[in-house]
Image (cartoon, rainbow over all chains, first blue to last red):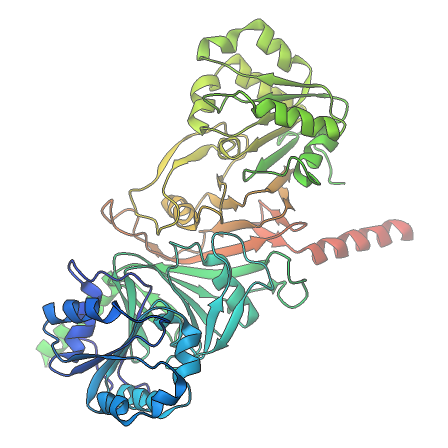
Length: 287
Length: 287
C-alpha cells in the first residue's frame, strides 16, 4: 500500500480516469476508489452533465457491489444552488468525491470559487479521495484542456484551455486518449509551455496519484509527454491553421502496475517497483 | 533544389505518401512527382489493389494537369504475369514508378524477387523516382508494417510485419497516421528493434527522400519516433495481450517544409534550412 499523506500539503488521493471505466466486470478502477472510501460516504458529483439522469444509478450499483453503500448524488442546476445548505451538508462528512463525465466547463463555471469547491478541497486536504472520469479527469488540472480535435494532426490554433480546479499542478491531462487519437492536441498543449507534463489517459484506465507519484491501473495505457528537452516548436510563430511542429519531445507509455514520479519526471517499471519493495522488506527483516 | 544523386548508392528519389493525397486541388505532393518525371514516362503500379479499376484514371488525369502525359498502368493478376514481356517493356524507359494503395502484401507477394521488381530497383538506382501512397508507402521499407489496430493503445502481440521492397533502410513507415490513431502501433514496431526509426505520415502528406535527408510536403504532419534512447520496454517479456510499455522514446513532429537527416537522426527546422541556404549563397557570392 502506498503511503497516505493525510493532511499533508499534497492531500489524499486523486484517481483520474480516462473515461468509460468498467462498471460491471472486475471494476479494477472503481475498486481503487472503494478501497479508499471504505465505510465512508462517497459523493458522486454529476455536475459536468447537462442532463444528469441515469449517471448516478450506474455508479451507485457498481460501488454497492464493492461494499461502498453510503453514496449520494450531488447536482446543481445553477451556480446559486452551490450555496444550498442541504447540498453542502451532503459533503460535510464525505470521505470521497467522484466527478462523472460531461463538460469540464460546466464543473468549473458552476462550482468554481464556491463553498462547495472549498469543501471538496478540504476533503482532499484531509486525506480523502477525489476522483474524476472523462471531463471529471480534465478538470483536475490548474489549466485544463477544453477543446481540440482528435484523429488529425494538431493545428497551432486548434486548442481551447481554461482554468481548472487545480488539484494537481504542473500537468495537463487528456482523456479517451488513444481511442480519440489525441496525441496531437496533447503535444500542442505541452508545446505552449513545457513546464506542464502532458498526461494522456486511455479509456478504462486511470492514474492513482498519491504524494509525488502516480500508479497506472486499468486495461489501457497512460502516455506521458515531457517537453523539457524540446529544442524547437512553432506554437509562437506559426499562424493558427499551421500544423504543429515540435522537436525532441520525450514520450513514455505506461501500462497497469507501472508508476511515475512527478517530481523527478521519471517512470518506474513494475519490476523496479517490486525490486525496491523486496529490498525494503529485506531491510526491515534484517532489523 | 536538392541534389539528385543520380546513380549514387542511394539512388534517386523516394516520395512516400500517407494516403489520400490531393489529386484535384493544388496537388502539392503530385507536383513533387511531376517535377522529377517531367517529360519522362511514369508507370502507375496498381498492383496493391485487388480491383484496380478506377485508380489509374484519377492519377492519369491529375498528372496530365501537371504536364506528365506519358503515364501508363501496370497491373498483374498473378505472379506469372511479372514475366510478361509487354509489361516489362512498359518499365523499360520509365523514369518514375508510382505505387497506389491497397494491400502491401499484394505488392510483395506478386512482384517480390521478379524481373519486374529488379527493373524498378534499376529505375531508382539510375536516379529515377519511386513513389508510394498508403500500402505503397509501407512497402518501401525492408521490414514493413502489415497489420495492427489503430485508435487504441498497442498490445504487444498486435502487430504483423513482413519483408518489404527495402528501397529505404533502417526505418519503418506507417501511413494514415494521425487519422487512424496509429501512434501505438508505430511505438510497438520501434520497441521491437530501436535500430529502425519509426516514421508516421499523415494523409495528404509525404516525405521526399533524397540522399540522406527527407523533406516534408503536404497538409498534415510527419511523426518520427526515435527509440535509440529507450530505457525499457516490455515487448520481449510481456504476454501478447499486454499493453505496450515503453520509456524514453524521442518524438519529433515535422510539418511542411521541414527536413530530417536520416543518418544523424535529427530534424532540421525550415528556419535553419533557410539560414544554411543563405549562408552558402553568401559564401558563393564572396568567392
